[in-house]
Each structure stands twice: as C-alpha cells, then as structure tokens.
Image (tube, rainbow, N blue to C red; front, side, top):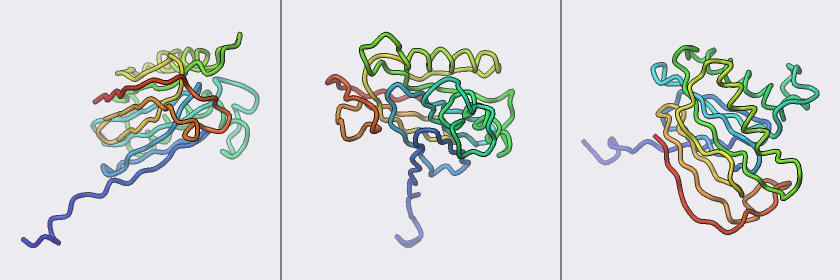
Amino acid sequence: MTDAAVQEPVERRVHVGQGEHHVSSDPDVVLTTILGSCVALCLRDPVAGVGGMNHFLLPEGAGTGETSGTGAGRRYGAYLMEILINDVLKAGGRRDRLEAKLFGGGRMFDVLTDVGAANVEFAERFLADEGISVLGGSLGGVGGRRLHYWPVSGRARQRVVTDRAALPPSTPPPPPAAGELELF
C-alpha cells in the first residue's frame, strides 16, 4: 500500500454562530462556537450516527413562532431547540434515542438580570419537558467558552475564552481563567 492510499481523514470545522444550528452525519465534521451568556445544545442519536448543535441568545420572545428561518425567531431557544430536534429526526435520528449536552449560560455582566441563568433554566426545562436525557456539559459560571462538538461521536471539548477578540461582539471579556473540559 502506498503512502497516498493511507490518508488520514481531514477534520472539517463548521462554525455555528448566534441564532444558527447545524446537523451532520459526517464523522469528520466538528461543530464549533463561542459562548458567553448564550447556550448551545449539542444533540445526537448515537445509533443513527447523526447529531447537531444550536446557539441561542435568549430563551423566548417575539418571533419565536416564525418559520422563515431568517427573522427574529432565530435568536430564541424556543425556536432553535425545535429546529435542531426536528432536523436531527429528519436526518434519521429517533426521539427515544436522543442524548444532549448543554454548554454556556455564563454570567457576563454584573447587573440585576442574569441572561445566562435564564438561558440555562430554559434549556434544562425544555429538554426535561421533551424527555431528552442530558448526559453532560458545562453551564453557568462567569466568562466565555469556546466549544468543539463532534456530532457523530458525541465528544465535546470546551476551553475557557480569555481573549476579548474571540468573543461575540456584544459580549464583554471574561475574567482571567484557565482550563479545559472534555466530555465523551
């Protein structure tokens, strides 16, 4: 066998921005995002080998019933949770096998309203109401996180973000921190 015949798979990164979601059954795909007070649901069916990620800014609000996919509804968890679940099911997943990991919901501002906590509470309640098991993740705390998720294997890696330039534009810098968390 020649060297040309033994090629390692090339990891393909797909960034999931605010108000977006992505579903894949490609084992070479890794979904990435950067979170502050936002929450990302990482969802998969391990038997069908399909999964995805969403990234929402707020739990609920005006426009959450919108179906165009381009308007205000895309900012809200109520819309993006349904869209991600439905797209994983359309790609071959089964509801009774879905497993989830949740990330984000950091406290980014020292103000009365903690948007991150509201996002976390919404996401946990939504998945409980849908009967979807949450296997892990990292929620709350302070500051931002960079997330990598392999939707076919379910592997997730999180790194604390300390670089202000790496955070979404409306997110203040987190306090200095170090560490990495990896979930399988």
